[in-house]
Image (cartoon, rainbow, N blue to C red):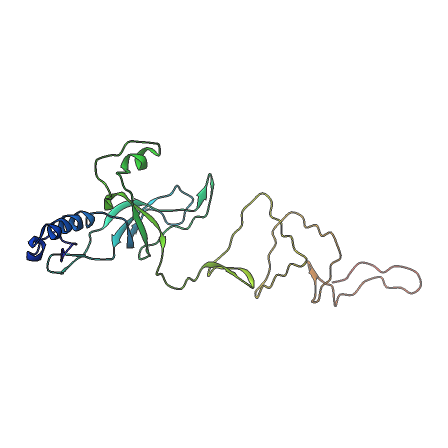
Length: 232
């Protein structure tokens, strides 16, 4: 049976019998079929912006082997479309980054015309199961993230080392309780604030220069009269 199916190079044992010769031919054909493999991202066209899906340059990480079982590294495969979770105009934008390790699959026919036109097309050539027709699916074997959405039995947690921004015509938070813990401060910039319900403050409240806990009033008089406004 063929000793070096990766190389297509026959050994003496491949010629001992018709079976060995046929096995060598079959292995030589199979060695040229690209199915799926682990790849490293070498380049990316997009960087997290609101843009159409881009492409990546990838390098297969499992080396080829020659007839003497010497390693032959793969070259970089350029401009492979990558997967984005998207339906219509709704998407999660999470572009690959250089250095990511992920999975690439390779189409059974030339997909270059479909990539160019985004329409039903004939194959661009007669090539089959070729690494030139790769699609990058996503990351595997990568490290610990620092920015993430975590799903656990405790609930959903969103973590970012920089900022989290929500932009919409209307944002609603619906829950029995909503808690905000800010170590530095809370800033609200809006023309008006409407609160439908009681307001309870456990700390001091300041309106302009008026301190709610320690301010005093002018025009104090005994009896049923009213005091003047806060003096500050």
